[in-house]
Image (cartoon, rainbow, N blue to C red; front, side):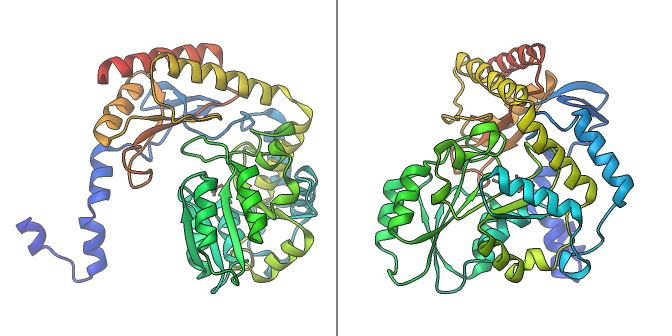
Length: 399
Ligand SMILES: Cc1ncc(COP(=O)(O)O)c(C=O)c1O
């Protein structure tokens, strides 16, 4: 302590960086940022050991699909590496327009806009439309990108209990009746694996004249016909104004999208800072997403396999008495309740060759500290058996 006092930087921010407790803990326990030496689907090599990836979001397992890889390679050769700027500065490209048109059609929308990150798309889906004086009703468990969009908008935010129509109804009743209103939800909550209670929530939103935004990063590719997502799963296309999401999960690329009516997308193109001032999606990442979207519609076996694996995996965890927070989807948390329990469990899985990620409060609500896992269509039966053995070992070792 004394040494740190005497060696203080003159710049306060440098002291902040050096003394940050969370960073010190992260470096001490090293749960994140592991650099894999190689990857082939769900098989990875880490520190010279062959392991199974159980925490990526490659739900449909398309990131190593030959057609997807070929599409990325061909686009790189045809268009080069990057559009090197925002579309407002040096124009759109045919590949952007093609992906946007296909995504819009797939989602039953008039128009779509793609960005270089899902984070930008989702943040922009709120920040572009909400403004000071508006009221935003937000599920308490929203993803960080949606909170950032809410904060940027300067609107008043009213949080309601996670996935609770009763609480939304109460919160809405107390809000300024004259303010323009928004409802922000996720289709599938990425930590919990819960499906949004969309029928009840959109009914309340309708009664209150809300502009409804749904982030379907984890529902797209997973729910609905051919993976059209949560809105399609419930048949509620008319009730949701904006569907945003990520290209980095089922679509095996990176980037994000916002799909809505033409009017809404044109407004976004005029007003969204994230759209106007950020470089466009790269040619290869766009082509990869376009190819994956095509495969979603022509090769149903990936979607079928995803759900077969999900059922098998959930049965494994249930058989071991683990708490999966009633996950209904391939994003399956193992809730252990405290960081003291999460860390050894995570280590035990790693020891047995299973790579997962731990998430502790405040990233999750207090008492819900968990290991986040996600099943892929690419997990083989043999891998699921190895995962089952490793889970049993972790339960025994930490129990
Ligand atoms: C619910 C949700 N929305 C948006 C994003 C951001 O997507 P991306 O990682 O593609 O930027 C994520 C990513 O984790 C997410 O889980």
